[in-house]
Image 1 (cartoon, rainbow, N blue to C red):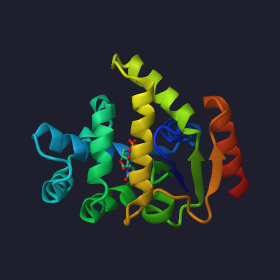
Image 2 (image 1 turned 60 degrees about the vertical axis):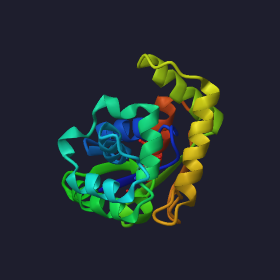
Image 3 (image 1 turned 180 degrees about the vertical axis):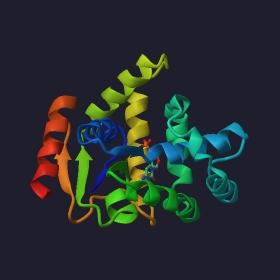
Length: 206
Ligand code: C5P
């Protein structure tokens, strides 16, 4: 079984994906980390994330061992990731890895922006997680502070809105709910309640 979770920045899809995977003993892939790894490779090399040729080269050279590195969560990397992810050839270079991950037993949960629409259009379960931008900014701010980053909540909100706008309006694989996705509004749910709602969705289609 494949569970596809999509949604905007800081909607809680990553935490939900991880918990859902643990519940079903499935593997979990936070696909945002892949785009962040490409972005970080460019930033580390002093390159501009908007440099398409460098972004494509970085995506082709990407080392999957680096996924999940906590340093990838920094705000500047998220912003650069949303720039590199607009390039169709960057997305293409990362597609096989994601589909391969999804197809291996016993089952997988992938979260991102285009899992239900492009990466796994045949996923048995598709969940589109939404949450009020103010709530999302609050959560991201608390996460950043817990990592020791000094952040201003208003700046985090502006960042989130800008990133969502870019992700929703790009011509290739934009952020949107698949026609057959179940929408889960996470604004007023804590982690446990969100997980419960997601399990109810999975059970309803099983
Ligand atoms: O989910 P996360 O905030 O880590 O994603 C960082 C950026 O990577 C997003 O803003 C988006 O532009 C891009 N991304 C994407 N497709 C995915 C996952 C992430 O374009 N499946």
